[in-house]
Image (cartoon, rainbow, N blue to C red; front, side, top):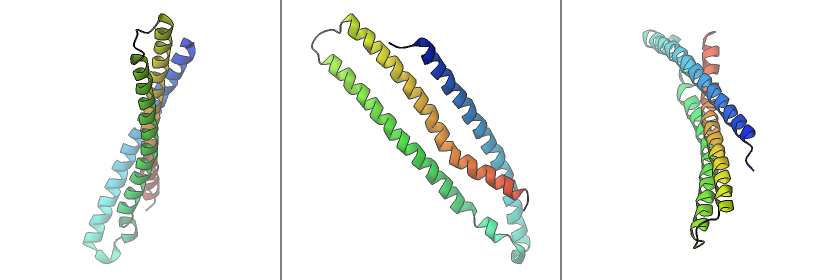
Length: 152
């Protein structure tokens, strides 16, 4: 039987997770603004005085982006396929009910309702986790760069 208290507790927990992801997204945007401003300044310095340019720092830009986005994509892809597999299993379950050749009984409908409510909750939890997993590598790179560039 579906416990409504556990259901709403898990729902609230996922919502708190969304708030954490939103905070990380905001921090990522702020760090990106700082990094872009500092690196544009470095590009200007390198253009004005090519021998004094910080090419080590400027050379990090593309490799670090490729690395962060590759890690984000890998984290999302793995969970995305798990989510798709869960959706397919639910569709197969619904198909089996439809192919019984008779209307479902009240007991079967109640079990189906509970299964669908639990499935919806799992999908919501997984979807919020996927967003967070995808953002974490990008957030880590952007905030580390902002911290490091304050001292360069």
